[in-house]
Image (cartoon, rainbow, N blue to C red; front, top):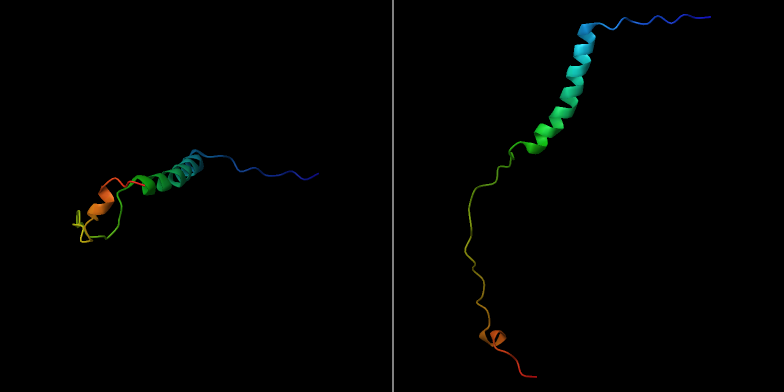
Length: 63
């Protein structure tokens, strides 16, 4: 019969384990809710430079 030696659980190892667990959970949460790190320029609203709408499309068509 083999007797397994069990390490005594110290306060220091318990604190270390809790700290690792909290870090494991907190890092993804902080990454999700942190401000974006995009390097896109802030250009604002751009004017539309396309063709104007055809006036005939705005009239009711009589079939």
